[in-house]
Image (cartoon, rainbow, N blue to C red; front, side, top):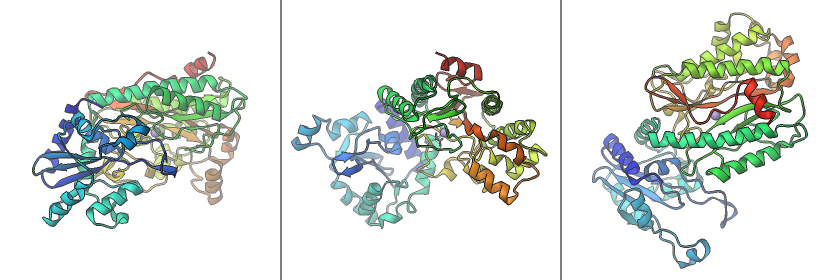
Amino acid sequence: MFKSEVYIKRRDELRKILKTGLALFIGNSEAPMNYPDNTYHFRQDSDFLYFFGIDLAGFIGLMDFDSGKDRIFGNDFGIDDIIWVGPQPTVKELALRCGITETLPLPKLEGILKDAISKKRRVHFLPPYRGESKMTLGSLLKENPCQMKTLASVDLIKAVISMRSIKEKVEIDEIEKAVDIAYEMHVTAMKMCRPGVKEQEIFGVIEGIALAKGGGTSFPIVLSVNGQTLHNHAHGNILKKGKMMVTDAGAETHLHYASDITRTTPVGGKFSQQQKEIYEIVLKANTEAINATRPGFSNRDLHFMACKIIATEMKNLGLMKGDVDEAVAAGAHALFMPHGLGHLLGLDVHDMEALDENISGYNDEIKRSDQFGTAYLRFALPYKPGHVFTVEPGCYFIPELIEKWKAEGKFRDFINYSKIESYMSIGGIRIEDNVLITEKGHKVLGKLIPKTVKDVESVCSL
Ligand code: GLY
Ligand code: MN
């Protein structure tokens, strides 16, 4: 946990924004895998972590904005628990670590909320994303558990997003630590990327690094020679010369701050001429986009800047044609880059996606596009110092998408379908870094993970 002052300050800030009513924060419970005592890896809810820091299952926080009182509800372990899991801190001790002195057993919460509801006091809560939390909220607030997402407080969502969007120094330090763990993961993957090795072996080793050095991975690792499948979680291929391996992998620190890095490595460590051609395009989009980030510039502008670089260079190779600005405005580039340039990063790898992406990434003036490709851009707002986000352009040759568009005769004025055929073995390439907006510009977080052709080839040769 951070020092208690960090959590006290955050709750005071929230109090200043919301002023009245109560806010209920349901910490996550254990999630059984196949029977109750055999549980999935426990991951605390990120908003609960943000305001209370207690990284254990079965706690609820309640803030009363009228009285200024914050309370933690939880049950102390008895001897029956302790003989299995060892001595545990009391609820009181845990609450003190986040600056809260008042604690109560969980069963007391229902009566307190009943009283608040009978007095018509507003009880704010955030949208639950786990069945167990929906049931807990439904039962505490006497509502249909299936409705809890729609009944969530937009005022609380907006307040939390405004706070979590701007990272504090202690949070940035954590994200840098998470990138440094990702450095080890990616450099190891590059060195192992040799003919005859099974994807699963590399996957297992780098997942092990995330577990050995921090709190595990920040999302299920994407690692495949079929990088044209954007989130490829199958790791059954044996690496062969002539292919490239996309590794999209990040770690969490022990405090659960995430990194999210992608690198693309040629099997055997040397790019072919054709691989180099496409790799350099993606690298150009990545580096020029990063260099352009500064306060005031928006992530939507950055997205289009990267798309235009890709379209221009694809035109230079003869894969696209026509006017680049028109092609990008029409969405033709999305054949090769059908996703957004990046997303916010913090306690969640897609930060605050559980809250409302249209609030964390958009506002009343900047609305989400419904155009294929750009519709997946999760964050479009102008940058402010303290924003942390990913920059992850990619270029993919997705057979099913190419076949579909070709059959439909889509964007024939902008896409040279016959030339694409000779590039299909490329699969996919993505290059992703994690960037902080500073007062004057930006900083790429953590240790620089090799990404130029020369640097990747040189790591592979070690
Ligand atoms: N790293 C996975 C993603 O950004 O979707
Ligand atoms: Mn990402």
